[in-house]
Amino acid sequence: MPFLNVIRWVAWKDLISEVRSRETISSMFFFALIVILVFSFSFSMDQAAARELIAGIIWVAFAFTGIIGLGKSFSAELQNDCLEHLQISPASKGAIYLGKLAANLLFMLIVEVILFPMFVIFFNLDVVEELPLLLLIFALATLGLSTVGTLFSAMTVQIRAREVMLPILLLPLAVPVMIAAVEATRGALHGDPLSLYGNWLQLLAVFDIVFTVLSFWAFEWILDS
Amino acid sequence: MMSALIKWMQRYEGWVGAGGGLCILAGLYLGLVASPPDYYQGEVVRIMYVHVPLVQTAMLAYSTLFVGSLWYLWKRDPIVDNLCHAAAGISAFLTALGLITGSIWAKPTWNTWWTWDARLVSFAVMFLILAGYLMLRTFIDDPEREARYAAVFAIVGFVDLPIVHFSVEWWRTLHQPLSFSMRGVSMSKDMLIPLGVMTVGFSLTFFYMVMIRTQMLYLDHLLAAKKGRLLSQVHLSSDVGSSSSSLSTP
Image 1 (cartoon, each protein chain N blue to C red):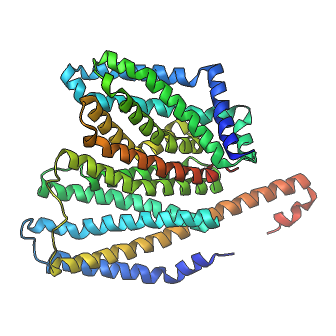
Image 2: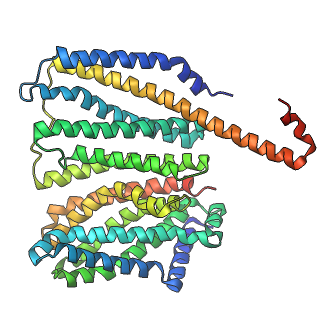
Image 3: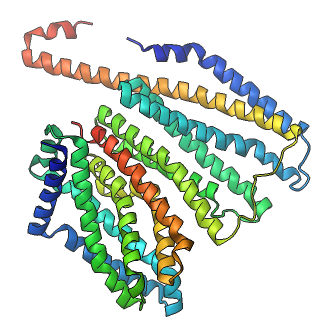
């Protein structure tokens, strides 16, 4: 099968099974909703404090939600030995990786787009002009989380204690993504000029490129029976 | 069958260990007795002769792990994986010691145990990555898969570290300029020589520890393999029944 077709079919397969079961997105969504509620109870913010803290809260919620989605991405393959079929399939492993990455990225972005209005409502944010820029930040940072996350999801699904190991392996590596995402989101929500925080977008883009290439190469060693 | 690498280690481990020990003894004398106290920091500066070599050796250890992991993925030699495992454990240990001695040094000089400085954060992240590496290894049963996954994780983590360092440096410098920086502090020869001697000593000791630990892990795997073979022989012979006589005779 040609390379691009493999990517398309793997992503398509994940989408179809998600549309039929609605497991991943709904569990991610409700988990994130609970995270938002817990944060709003535990900080009891006024509007000024919310303005300072909200970027961090958004990204903690997104990262933890993302980990749930990433973990489910490959644990779903354990049923009916689907993982072994992926391992022995003659298709390029890198294409399988990119297909999985595309599906994970899409799920996380869908949840983020549903969740963000909740933040706007609960924390009284004013975001109308900055919306396209915020979406760009979300896309870049979510791609960063899911490049390494997809690789580690495939790794941890094949070992013991997989639910514990995915965050333990992923979060230290995601430190640059979290810093850059929080700083850029804060800048955008404050309405700062882009020149003040544009370098964080560049950092996110560099991280995305480096780790997409690296994970694409390394996936060969992970999905190998 | 014994690998050339193990043989080479057995031949040179004594020399490397002795060299490391001598350098550390000489460095301790030079650093603690012969060198002058610092103009600003006084006697406190002497922890530098332990802290800086520890940190540099920890980075040397992770670099060894990185090169070893690439080498393993290329050649798939189990002994190289033992080497990686050994280097990772020692690197995690050295990183923890580096963080602790750094904290002790920071209290009198910066008046704080911890600050969100780029080096401190990237070192803490490096410790977390190494701890994750060692945990990952304990959760995989199949030795070949354990080696493969661990190598991939070590490589991905190594590539991440400069980006972490860079991002934290940006993060802090955008908010406030670093109020304390070791950059630009030029060192007198009286301090540079003991520091160099200690660094060489720690590096040699690290290589000595890696050599010993690699051999231990190698023997461990050999033992596991022999046990497995013995067990399968017993199973085989009990299945066949009559051919068990060759095993029962001493």
